[in-house]
Length: 157
Picture 1 (cartoon, rainbow, N blue to C red):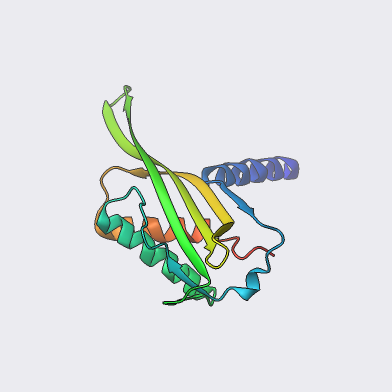
Picture 2: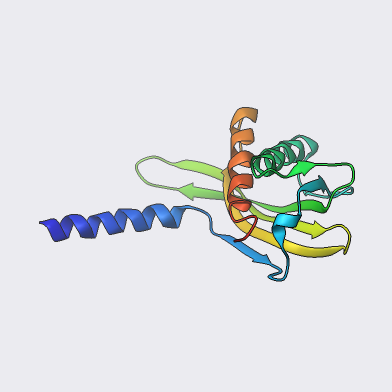
């Protein structure tokens, strides 16, 4: 009986972990990331989002970086850039009930660039899925969670 409980615990843990989006992180291992304390968003950011969603994502990234003691500056050490490719998808299910659900698949990339050397030093990428119709509060929460996932491993240890 005890081994059955352990088995199901691992199954449930595996299901929970498989549902979280995987974030791929790459960075320059020669960089001392603790030297960077200021940032600014890339001046000509082309995110692929409409202006409202871009502002939500920027606000979310700003909050995460502020929590990591990295502040915005007119004369930054880092540029932060992000871009999102979106693809709409529709699922149709037929069963006891017929229903149609629409989602947006997003490929999200966040770059951090050394301003002085104009060199990419850190990058995170992930895929995510969000429902097509979200109110602004839910959308803001979605972008906050996305920024937290993307920047969870910044700075690298």
